[in-house]
Length: 116
Ligand SMILES: [Zn+2]
Image 1 (cartoon, rainbow, N blue to C red):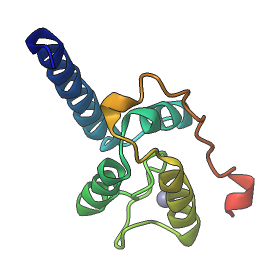
Image 2: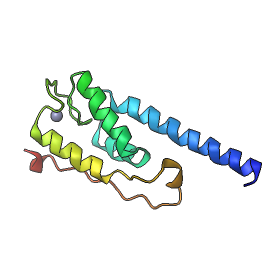
Image 3: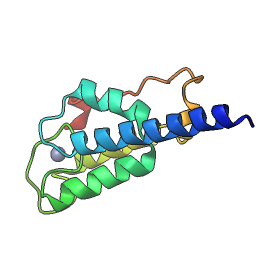
């Protein structure tokens, strides 16, 4: 591969990782909206999301990012746990830098009504 092309490719990979890292930090905060969660999922891997739920649990907030409940376990309720698993299953497993050409599949959140 041409040196400049390789350099551009690496720079893009780093930029994708940085963006994902920034989103991970954002999703650790309480008060994430559903839109933010849906959008973030397009730029994360399931592993990033796993880290988010675990880090939130360490800070004693429910692992599901749109929920602000305080917890003693990893999620405030079985409903949030189910919604979180449902979300995580939809996150693409393809490498971040290969997604530019992919048409992103919109992520769908478990509706709150079904969630009770
Ligand atoms: Zn919750």
